[in-house]
Image (cartoon, rainbow, N blue to C red; front, side, top):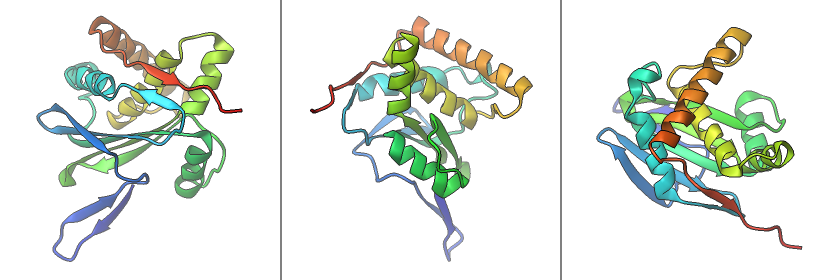
Length: 186
């Protein structure tokens, strides 16, 4: 996300992905923008919105939760996420999740960009559910916006426990979104 101070003192922001087609209200001070930029991903936007709403409904369990305002979720290919990784973090390697902090005073919670390809490859290799893995990536980004960090071993353990609590919460609430990948064309 690029932020710019306008002449009138307001702050404008440009997210790193094109504007999404649909917005979903999840709580009074949350707008959810979902951008599916993966050519083979099929997702249930309402299911994703329900998952975010469930997390937003329990901020006290997660350091106050994700800040209020517009939350942008972008589902990307490995190549697209690697480009963002290089452009914004000077590391062009592939990664699973990149989170950009927002500007709460401007009504922007932040942006979570996830790699659909990495989730699919990991799920296949580990023989786990693709939807659960991709949901974990969304939860991971949401937790970063809530103030969790995973760069140091001790903080990483804390974040992993928060991820497990968040996924358990989503399961109990029946709010685990479903994702599906269409077969590759030959």
